[in-house]
Image (cartoon, rainbow, N blue to C red; front, side):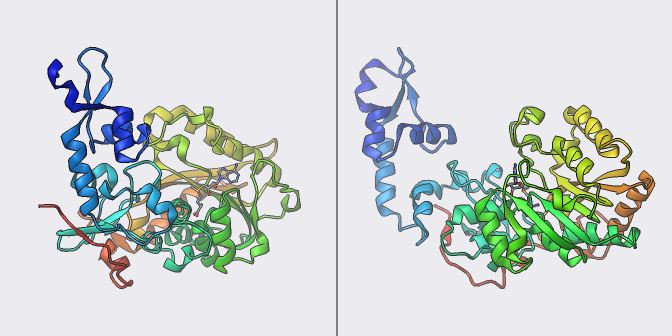
Length: 406
Ligand SMILES: C[S@@+](CC[C@H](N)C(=O)[O-])C[C@H]1O[C@@H](n2cnc3c(N)ncnc32)[C@H](O)[C@@H]1O
């Protein structure tokens, strides 16, 4: 507990915030993140900040070179002190290791101190990942995030949501192998920046339309050249007019938002307005495609979501009177398909008027398409999982490496 006479060497939160030129909210976040920890006043419990620590922080900030020549957003998001050893090595912030496959990178740079960064191969330095590198870690072309007028944060948010195309391509190709007469006409909902769209395109499907409501993602997909820009619609799927596609589709696919089920999210499930999974059977009922492929986060498979999942699969099997699908669900890892990232996703495959066993055959065929294997997996293909270095080692080094403070 603080001695009463020492209180004068401590500043109230408002005074500390003014001195440091940040808001009180930022200071509370710093406190929680351990960057500048407050003590509590012995009587009223208010936060108190040590003058010595604040001086140290100001000195360190003055001595620190500029972080990068990034855009305005970067400068707002990343105060110099974010290059803190405790942040960089905290697994919560997912440092990417050069000689390992990437994990899913942090994409929300608004919430201090989350940023995507990589540790150098020799382990002695680290730097932020560029949006293009983050794309490459998902097997997307680095240039797919290039577009004037978008901030780095918007590019990273858009690309961070994408299904790695080789993973989507494996599922799409397996579906076509099993159902050889499947028409290729496709509509994709929640297409984002086009990770799944690229995969389905290379599996031979022809998009009649994609729909997403995120403007930066739609902008990037429109300019990608993967599909004609006129087929890439910026709209809310709940109000989009799907009537031109009724009864015309070989495939309905998409990646409805996964936040409700992410184990790192709030898991509000059906109470969350972003839960589009529950709405998908209604769309199936209207469009009656020959097949569907949907993907979501593996959190859907945890025990706490069991009744939701069972209810969903029941509705996918019979989305409307007289309409039936054989349905199979499987968890897949993008790294097994040559993606330098261990991104796990749950896929739902449905085949109209076919038994569930045939939908399971699709996942058997997906397994046969694995090209890489993880540590300890001696049953699969020969090549080991690809690494961060494999993906970005040949790209131009953007610089900005920091050595660990000694
Ligand atoms: C997980 S991301 C999909 C990523 C995409 N499958 C890919 O591979 O790039 C989910 C997407 O759903 C979109 N979305 C969420 N709610 C939506 C809605 N009501 N209408 C249209 N798009 C929506 C988001 O903008 C986001 O791009």
